[in-house]
Image (tube, rainbow, N blue to C red):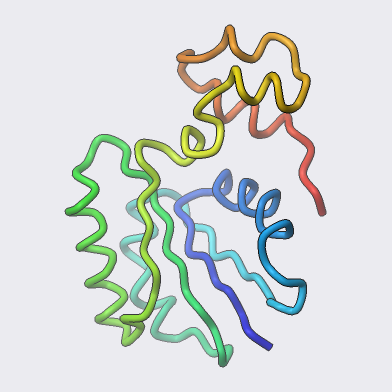
Length: 140
């Protein structure tokens, strides 16, 4: 059985993927999430976790927020870590600027699509994306 493995900077990324992936990938693909305690922890442990991953037929995706850093530098560093682990085929993606903005960037559209009143007025408020994300029901 194929295995799709996500290496994630934080728990909110896992929550987002758990809500989206069941709609996008076939049910015969096993999904694993390796969640780190922030970007420093991800970069510190990524090579070791990749190197010693034991499940065969695994496909790796590394997802990290850009935050205020240069996305090209971040991606280059993560690709190097994957190569050092012998997993040069790993897919590295940088969510610009933050993962929450990546999937809740237009709160007016979310308000219209989900019928949740008052979301559009919160656009631009610091931390809004994460609070809204955690309030949305997730499919198990």
